[in-house]
Amino acid sequence: MEFFDWMGIPQFFLDFFSVRCETSQEVVDTLSLQLYICIGVAAGLFLIGQIFCGVGLYRLAKRAGYKYPWLGFIPVACTWLSGKLAGEASFFGQKMKRAGLYAALLEVLYICLQIFVLVLNFLTLKAGYYIFDQNQSGGGTWKLNRAAMGSMSWLCDAVFYCDMINYVVWLLVAVFFFVLYTAFFRKYYARNPFLMTFLCVIVPARGFVIFAVRNNRPIDYQAYMRRRMEEYARRNAPYGGNGGYGNYNGGQGYGGNAPQGGSPFSDFGDDRGQSGGQSGGGQSGNSGGGQDDPFSDF
Image (tube, rainbow, N blue to C red; front, side, top):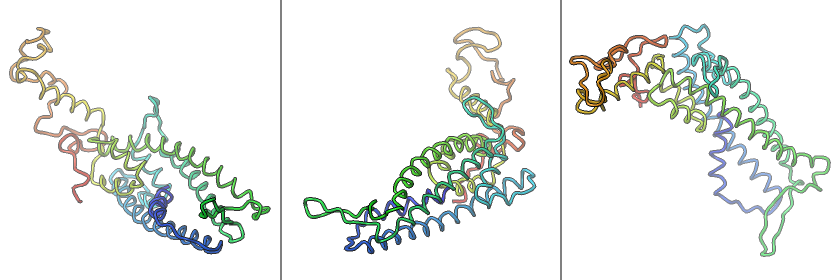
């Protein structure tokens, strides 16, 4: 999926360079060169990102005991493996056990449509298909001439409608990717899972982000958030923690004294000075303030 996202980056910069073409053949040559540049740049960036993604997923899957951790190096299969590592996801409050599989299937559909559109664009690169549309000021633009295309005029409509379908499919892929990688980073980077998910879905940097958390241990996100709220409550208790909103056990009301030498959250465990015990199938020493910084290597 990232391959086609990367193609848009060189195309964005190429749009700033206007090339004056005198003949239809020059138009075709220019468009062909732009396509080859976009494909070459996208292929290089995609390959680098896929290697980083494979290394990251291989490390996480190997530690989790999965039989085929090398699947992280294969496009689409890495999405499925990410779902296996993420575990159960939540889709609008509903539990989803196969988010990785659904996201991978939609990704395959999106890739097939994008390849089809790319083939259609190459089919339109014939000099006889273009005419110069001159305006009143003497300028103009080159555009496809349906009459000159004859029986191939359907290419114009096909490219247009396939682009619209691709946009809808991309939205579906984005939704399932958000569900999948929110669950993934809640497990492997609970400190800010939504930022990491954004970098995976909207920005084509999934491989680099997954590589960044390769050394993190899985944690229980709910337990992590509970500890964070307890820590926040302790730090922000009025009167230095001795007053506040009353004794939680005695119910003395506002201004009451909390039990001396203890915490009102002692029943839930005090994580001051330590990271906690084991949770989420791994060491929760990576949670809270002690969680490994995924960008420490950089």
